Length: 239
Image (cartoon, rainbow, N blue to C red; front, side, top):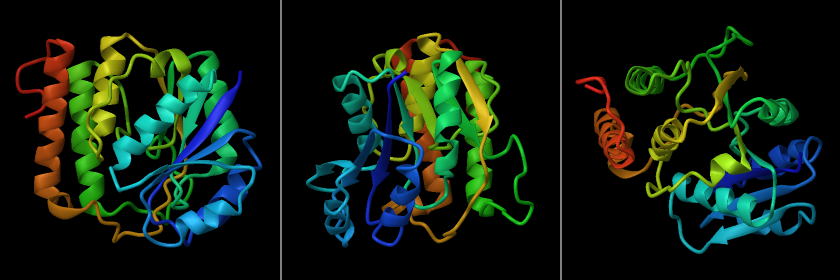
């Protein structure tokens, strides 16, 4: 199975070289989607001959970067795509394991809560709470059995990528993916990945830095995705 590994990047000058130095050990086809970085990230990427880069001329959002990666995998004729973040919170050594899961599933989603790798690692409470609430919506509204609705370490079959119509360009984009995956009856499995938090002060940008606003935004995107997909859900399941 021919696999593309893609990393969305925005102002990752301190981590992009060490992370990609590990990724190249486990993947031969690597794409970085630079979402309009304004630091030294673009300069550092220029020296990596083994890594292809697609650059957004301006910052468009996390969802936009993944949408670009999805299309690149389709256009490149790949059989599958693995996505991971470039901030050091995902273990590149697990890329082959996620890719291998595509033999039995359409989406292999990393979960930081299936197994405890390091008891000293704890997620920021605010982010843990929002993840737990959104994961509850996904399970109750869509009939899934997920433990981690927001892990960016995933593998997708090409046929799954062709099902998606991504319109949310920000951090709520995974909610559209989950809804559309269920609407298309895709096979979904989770696999355990380590919980690693290196920067608890990460900003989401603007009003999304407020936890209440962010959760309400996620709910609106989720409900809109359900309506667009024509999925009937239990009353109040995302309330």
